[in-house]
Image (cartoon, rainbow, N blue to C red; front, side):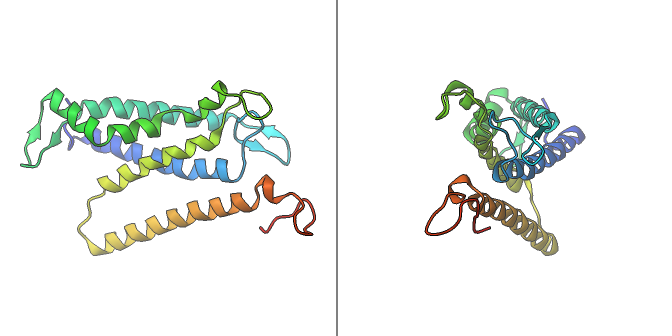
Length: 196
């Protein structure tokens, strides 16, 4: 069993936090700025037509580490309401299954592979990286882990949260403006223009 205050568990939580932040920034860039090709592979440069699969490979390695985190969490003890360390494996599993396991499972599941099962409008089976945005719910677990008592750090945390939210909203705003449906001729506007 792995104690929650062990040096390894603290290090592991920092690694998972870093990977979650990476996922949050990278996925928004891929999805909102259309950095994937017609088959769903990313990082795709539409100007040059080149495809770099290294970011996609790194992304799947991150997914494997998230799966390892799920397995480790089933083996991590916790403190109960009376502040006593719970060592019973069944109680640990029940506690994890009740609270964070559904979020971790949804955040880990490779939803983009659903596109391989069902064909798109052209009848082609492709990856759909847009489904990867579901993984951003893992950020809620990071926010829950942050336990702060200092007001200066709380303000910094709120500022960081605001910047992350502004990044996500700004990227979504850009993707709406640059979407294909805004590039069609409409109400006297020439084809190939958008409001962005």
